[in-house]
Amino acid sequence: MTVKSPVCTRNDLAAVLNVTAGERFLYEVRFEGGAQPVFAIVDQHGTVVLSQASSPDNDGVYRRRWPVDVSKIEIPNDLTHTCGMHFALATKYHWTVTRLNVSGNAIEVHKDCVYESDPHDSRDEWFAPFRILTV
Image 1: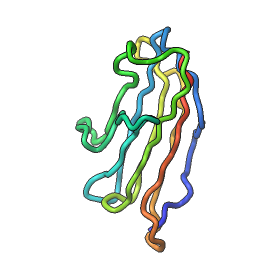
Image 2 (image 1 turned 135 degrees about the vertical axis):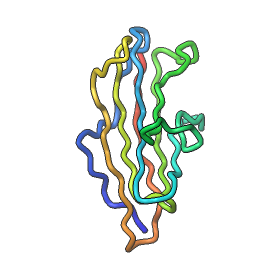
Image 3 (image 1 turned 90 degrees about the horizontal axis):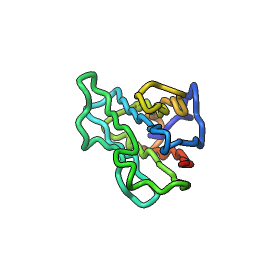
């Protein structure tokens, strides 16, 4: 199966994150139409930020705030996080990226996309990049 073009209400390719002011990103991944998700959000070095190996919240949504440890983040820096999704065991994913202030309140949604497989083709994965500029 192939993945249809994503349907996005917001699809920023990049965002600035003011780490020194306490900002964080909230990554959320939901899935539908299958037994389990197979996905991972990784940085350009291969470090996993969030994956199906994490435990979902009670509502079934996989969530992670990033960065977890600010002391490990270079400022300024130019990073890439990529969400890779496999559609063998789930037919639809919903990925959102929200920038939060130091209090944990939403400042802005940078990515809000739904990725769905097309059962009439054989390609079954999709990779969605997100560039981060830390200040």
